[in-house]
Length: 195
Image (cartoon, rainbow, N blue to C red; front, side, top):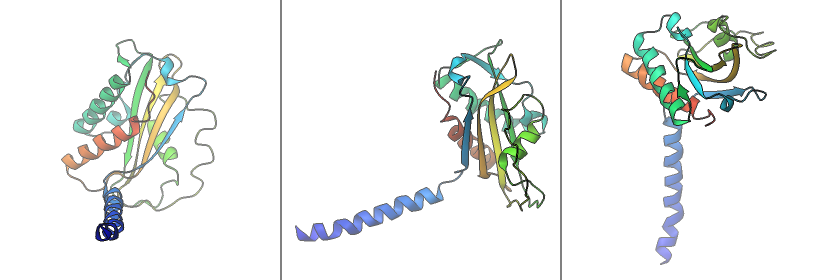
C-alpha cells in the first residue's frame, strides 16, 4: 500500500511534464487578438458571404491557400448559425502577411501591417492602429499575420475581427502551408460568437 502511494507523485510529475512538453510542441499556436464593435454585435447579423475578391486573393496567394481559408470559414460560420447568402448582411475578408525571410523594415505591430495590406476596403474603428508602428524591428524568419474581418455590408464598417500573429510561415511545402492555415483559421474562429 505504501509503495503505491510513494510512486503516485512521481507518476503524476511525469504526466504533468509530458503534458507541458506536448503543449509546448504543438504546432501553430499564434497570438490571437479579437476586436468587436460593442455597439454593433456580430450576432445581430444573420447572413454572410465572402468579399469578391478577398484581400488574400488580390495579393496573389495560390488558389489552394484561398480555398483553405474559404472552407474553414464556411464551416465555422455554419456551425455558429450564420447563413451564407447572395444578399449578405456581413462580408468576410481575409488578409495574410506570411513572411518568408528576414525584413528589418517591418513595423512593430501586426495590426499595422495587416491593415495597410488590406487597403481601403472598409473603415476600421476610429483610432484603430494609431500610434502603432513607431519603431521597427527585425522580423524573424517565418513571422506572419492573418486577419479575418467581418464587415457590415451596407456601411462597410468592421464589426468583428480576429488577427493571428506569430511563427506562421517560413519555407513550407504546399501541404504544410494548408495544414497551418486550417489550424490557425479554426483557432481564430473559435472566438466568433454563435447566433
